Structures are given as structure tokens and as C-alpha cells.
Length: 124
Image 1 (cartoon, helix red, strand yellow):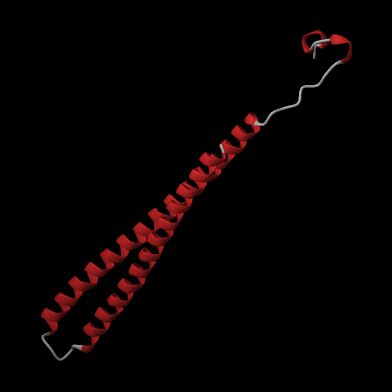
Image 2: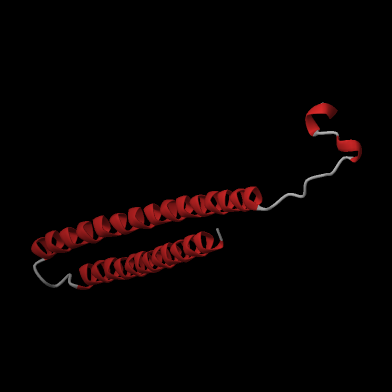
């Protein structure tokens, strides 16, 4: 039972670390995309002297693309949060099951009754 518990803990820790890494990557991606979006907006503002119509369309497309990527990164982050919550609940459930199994496997002392009476004779 302790080996199974140890194995479960290792697997849960591995999954937690993996999710933590993905959350970090999603957050970094979100920050990077926000920065790129702001840069695209700044460039759009600074390039007034060039072909305004062409550049406006180009930058608008870039902004839309970055906004879509940002929304995707946000959705990924929310999914990772949900996954982490499910893993936490699964870990808690597994730990409860392991405790219950350990309790069931724990030897219980049998009470001895004087006079040779058995438990069946005593009744509830």
C-alpha cells in the first residue's frame, strides 16, 4: 500500500509539475503576445507618413492575429487551471482511498471475553 501511495504521489507530482510548466509557458506567451500587440499598435501610430491605408490594413490584420493568439493563450491558461483543479481533486481522492485501504489492512486486536462467550452470544 505504501509503494502504491508513493507511486501515486510521484505521478501526481509529475503531473503537477507538468501543469505548472504549461501554466508558466501560457502566461509567458500571453505576456509576449500582449507586448507584441502593443508594439503593433505603436508602429501603427508611428507610421502616419507612409501609405496609411495599406499599413492600416496590414497592422489591423496583425492586431487581429495577435488578439486571436492572445485569446487562445487565455483559453489554454483556463484549461490548464481546470486540469490542475481536476488533478488536485483526483490526488485528494486517491489519498483518501489509500488511507481507507491502509485502515482496512491495519490489524485490529480481537477483544477476549471471559467465560468463553462468543460475539454472537453477546448480541448488539
